[in-house]
Image 1 (spheres, rainbow, N blue to C red):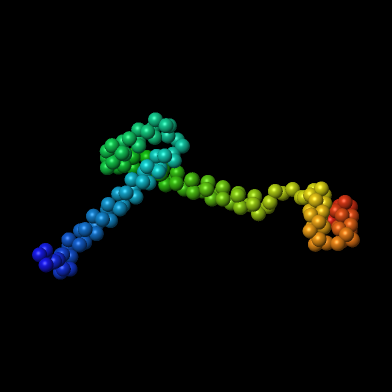
Image 2: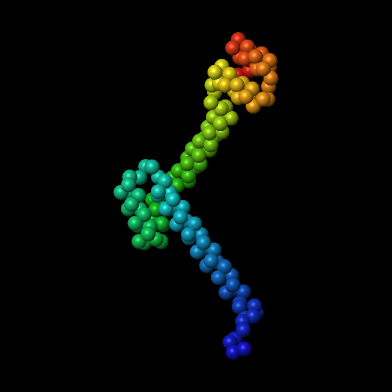
Length: 144
């Protein structure tokens, strides 16, 4: 063994805590950076030039750009995110309601007769059962 071996007791506790703090702050910085960039892109009140300006500012001078953005527009970041979450929830609820409700139109008698013909052609019902079901559909008392 030519290299030095560092054991756990060779690494001071304070240095370990400092390393964890730097790592934590580094991760938090990236979370803040991505939230700011996401907020810039999703904000409908900003024009295309405004979005471009903020993006260039945050990319060219990331620390200054992000901090200035948070100071200037940070108050409404949470409101915009909440509004987007509500809109997504309403869209999901609307989709679920529409899907659960179906098309909302009852099947026509033509569709019912076509379905009965297919069932009879497969041999699942007899001629007599087909005739009775057809009479029910045509009289309007059959299932829709």
